[in-house]
Image (cartoon, rainbow, N blue to C red; front, side, top):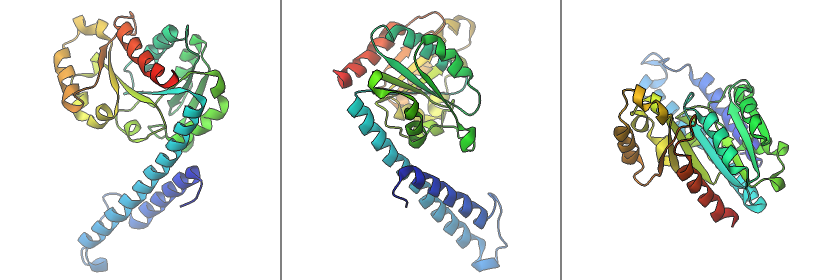
Length: 268
């Protein structure tokens, strides 16, 4: 593996692509009598691909540790905010920054496959905003450590206390990639249904807190809030859950107090 973690991730990704083309398309099966039979070949392919994926994640973890060390040296608290598309993550973040920027210097990294729509919305807060579009990397549905590290060249870490990473909207992939953050938060809107925590357990298992957003819509929806909370507790029993409305500001005080408490522990 290359010594450079970023190069290592790229090399591992290239290897996975080359392996995929060499072994054939997904779902393609050789004749059972070719090369000793299909079962043996299928087993060999699965084993080799798992090793390659492990190399990609290992390379990401190396880069994440380097990011974490840098954030610690610069005394910057990093929050990774994740959700599915349409949860109200950007509006929640705008409201959160509006409350925090009276006492904290903040910056934001925004991840999307295409467009600068969310970054444009966040610019109204006055915080420095850096946009990452993953279509340059094949349209990844998550941000990885080396991509965040590259974005840091546009942020003066000596001039901020809080860096928020608004991850690509997705309840699966972002949870798998450490970026060197201090805390992870998942935003779940009441319009998404109560079943998301048990359908996408890794996200809720990996996060430190959950924001149940758009509670102002509860009178108009057939939604069982208690069931949603129970489903979250089933995956992560001790997770703090904050019921909020990014539109009205309802419930933001407990959420902000929790976040400020985490920031204070790191920054002193």
